[in-house]
Image (cartoon, rainbow, N blue to C red; front, side):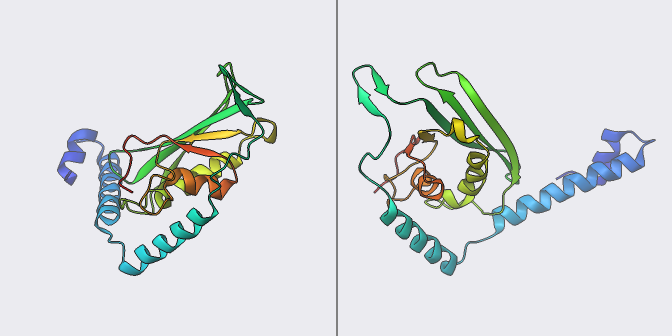
Length: 189
């Protein structure tokens, strides 16, 4: 970790106030990181999350109920698609959530929004939605109604999840929007 001396060296010997500020910022980030990483999820919290995932999974719609349909080489009636993702800062204290809505079939961006947020939920495999979805819901609520996406692509699993409720499913149920999970890795189900 950085010492106060390191901060003085970075700020210059003549600027002790700036050195103090740099050290305080570094210390705050360090303490937050330790708290976020070191915080354990209790067995009770895990059981509550599992119960919520099972409840949400039971609400998942598995048949197409969309206002567009696949046709050869196009999707008839599809006008707006969106993609969402969350990227984490190296300190694991903050993250950036982003939504981009594009026209279809041109795929021209018509709306985008990003927001930084402080992580309050630690990373627990199988429960990523509880860490990411609240921020994504807030961003999707900011999309003007005339640009509401007809489908949202989510960087995460949907039904391919141990409890059939990955981030894509969780986001879809939370927003009422059709979602498709586009995960880097499919979880074991």
